Image 1 (cartoon, rainbow, N blue to C red):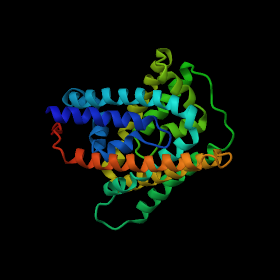
Image 2 (cartoon, one colour; image 1 turned 90 degrees about the vertical axis):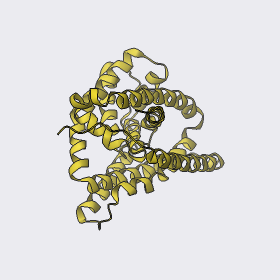
Image 3 (cartoon, rainbow, N blue to C red; image 1 turned 30 degrees about the vertical axis):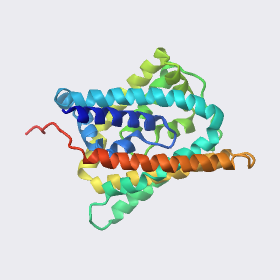
Length: 286
């Protein structure tokens, strides 16, 4: 593995880690955008085969993800306190710019079939359910107990393996987002350990299923991802609109939306550059 290749995987890991923690955003979507998703899912689904064979890729990406998560947790802790509602619109704009990149993965040149449309609609519907769940008045939990963190870790792992699904948005809806951010931002090891164990459980249980879907139902899977991603835009913007009180936030919201579009476009350009770089992949077993 060349030095540029190593640096690329590390930087991509940071982006994935940051987006894993953003409400409405998806770390797995970033993996799709940067062209490492299928390789990562393959490795995770056959970890006993690829752990040694693809060790540099997994370690560098993993270190980047951990660093990105910590950076994002500390940043979110500060920003949510001061700009919670405008930040939701920033996330929505950021995700919106990703939609063409997701479609490129779904578009195989063939006509859309009914199953593809169903997958697209189903993915969008899932995020509408999340939006509805967030309005049921479920209070955010303030417990950082081991069981809470374990469940949160499983949810995050499933979402991390499924592009378009925002783990943070779902945790926000069920009241687990606040304790997760607090634990990661303050580096509470007693809370982070169960979170990591839960994430490992989720990866081991669901990686094979996701890998099977991508391998055998590629177009429908990516159509579902596209629906989930588009639904994330509506979910995050909807939560922001429903939380607004008064009209004194419009200027801030406009600034955050523009910033999200600009940064999203920058990520699009960077991802195109990354995908053009040569990538060394381990050979499949015969």
